Amino acid sequence: MKTKHKKDKVNIITLGCSKNLVDSEVLSGQLAAADINVLHESKKLDHNIVVVNTCGFIDKAKEESINTILEQVELKKKGKLDKVYVTGCLSERYRQNLEDEIPEVDAFFGTMELPFLLKKFEVDYKAELLGDRLLGTPNHYAYLKISEGCNRTCSFCAIPLMRGKHVSRSIESLVDEAKKLVAQGVKEIMLIAQELTYYGLDIYKKRELPRLLHALADIPGLEWIRLHYAYPSKFPMEIIDAMKERENICNYLDMPLQHASNKMLKAMKRQITREEMEDIIGEIKYKIPGICLRTTLIAGFPGETFDDVEELKTFLKKIEFDRVGIFTYSHEENTSAHLLDDIIPEEVKEQRAQEIMTVQQEISYQKNEEKIGQTFKVIIDKKEAGKYLGRTEFDSVEVDNEVIVNSANKLYPGDFVNVKITSAFDYDLEGEVVN
Image (cartoon, rainbow, N blue to C red):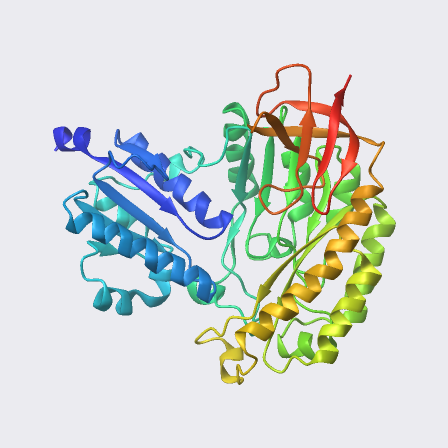
């Protein structure tokens, strides 16, 4: 069989969130360790096997996943591929339907079935390889998934159906993996989970994210640690204390709130009120005055009224988040919100989302204008159209602002430079490298 393995070339296509990307990187590492040629998102068509890692989060994501599977099946029909395998959230959630509708796929696998997928390549899953990922990101940053699944019962969310209950990884295994990433050249690690603040409750019987942060901050060469997806209800302030104490933990927090109307928060089963959210945010800003707060919102949840949207806009103007992302509500089967009537037309949901983002756009521009003349530490991500593009500690990859960096000297991805801001735009900054 060894000769066959030499011939096989596997391309992994990843859809959806950064948590899926980490799963693809782990799969790549396992295959590469078995001497199988593996690629990420290759456009060359010089491979003979494809693994599509799907997303099943909302309608648009499901549609993209199905279209991608159909494209790969079409290539197989034309004789350009030998095998098409499908894994990930969509496969976990709708396997039976997918098997019936797209029988040309060679096998479907759920989110927890990596060992079974590897068997198709005659490879045994090796737990000791967990930290040996083939990065699908540039070498200077990586995601670190600290837990799997979620115990929350938000009415709109299908993630627990696809990812199961919350399961934390040990601090030792995460520190070990982070050290391996740093040894590969990674300078920035983004901590991800469905719910960061829950970390440790299952294995240590208490919330241990602060202890994990201190352990990671001790790793030499790890310049930036960034926190994504922290649930606001019962938010442990010790996280902010750790952020304040350790220089390499970015003053950045991604806290998805989803709404600001108490009626909507209750319908969404968020276990928090607008007043409690304001108190938490006030305390966080008091502890770290310059912190960057990012949130995510949902427009068009069943029962949402004009007044609810106005309340959300008022809340945004009061809090002045640095970064905001917004989704339109997606009616998901087997969630408790699916029992509600999804009667708000799609175009009205889109219009509400646009209105909310218009409010945020003004806040973002104003905050960016205030940065003119200031100097920030910036990590260089890439060069595009003759310009260097980077990020401050207040910006995560792909979802946040970029800094257009003008430099007389050659810069490389992963370089840290001091940049004096000269211009501000709605969502981006421009500046010059200063010594």
